[in-house]
Length: 129
Image (cartoon, rainbow, N blue to C red; front, side, top):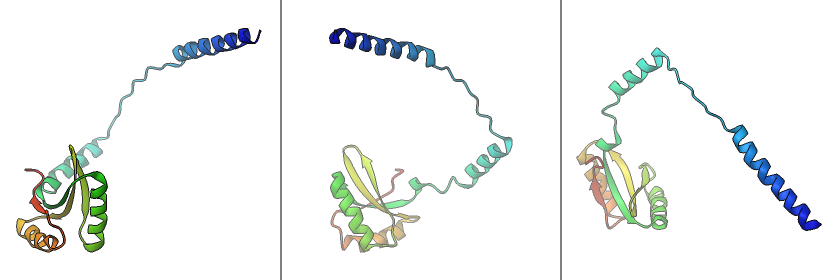
């Protein structure tokens, strides 16, 4: 008797699940209308900001390797060089730690000399190239 009750309960749950799936499915179509003012504002921003790009700036790579070591390196770097930004970049299969964002190569090379005193394998890079 108990087995029959369990089968009926299970069958009821399965039937309810399948029927509710078909009943509750929805088809949604919507349009996003943007205002003319917003579109003009975005166009102006694109005109003003083409020169401000991360790819046009020089960076210094201080680490290339595993994720955990990259995290330790970035924490150590931020403690030693508090006024310079740092980020972890993933490029298969390694994690890279890039520091700084320098407009000119001369500025980047000056900082490279200081960073080289603390870190062995440093590279001056320009990410966009």
